[in-house]
Length: 279
Image 1: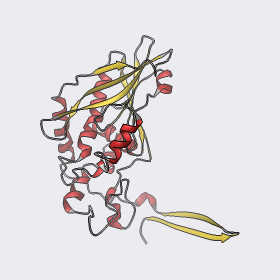
Image 2: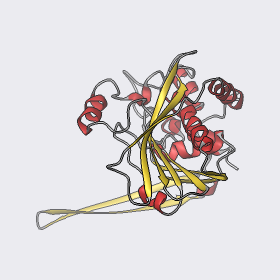
Image 3: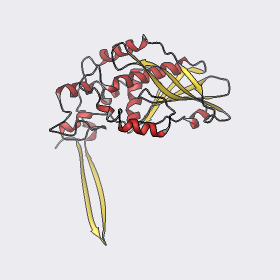
Image 4: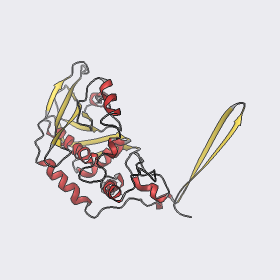
């Protein structure tokens, strides 16, 4: 009776095993409308954020990582300044930079991470094809520590980071993250071996979301490749359909995030609203 999807799931038990099959039908999927609202001051909010970012020096640092470098590519751990979690504060973004050793001017590719807390890896294969690549983390922690440390952080201070500060659009965790992706582009475009034209961004899941966000916020981006982007149409559950990861509006009742403040704040971070602004 309305645009959407209907799924049929059939199961059968045979010989002590359960078999499952499914099929999904789309009804006028081109007419499905987003559940999330487009805030009237969305563009003003992010313009203000970028203005605050522009007042912070990049202050880039790099350290060669010989153990990851190859005969044709140098790999570095890098960091640079970003906005902080509070007004007037700063933080740092850490990442892994890979550059072709041969002299010349190259396109630049920003790789943004999926959800979680993990070390960053060099996009060596892309760099070997003739590009500068930068894989960033979003948590403001070094990019090349022992795996155990990331695991401890994931189950400790960074557990459920995706709802941290959600009640306020100015203090939500992803404000620093989204602006940090723009700052990563500031760093890439400041490199003397960038060709001055080609800037690309790519990622999946949370990285798919960050790819779209970065392309929408930064007109320097010329190419975008996003796959299964998260953080998309997050309040879909309120209309009886799925919402994007991290599904924070799925639960009702006690401890639900379905408050007026959190829903309003989330609209400024919903990837649907950034996708509207992609050219």
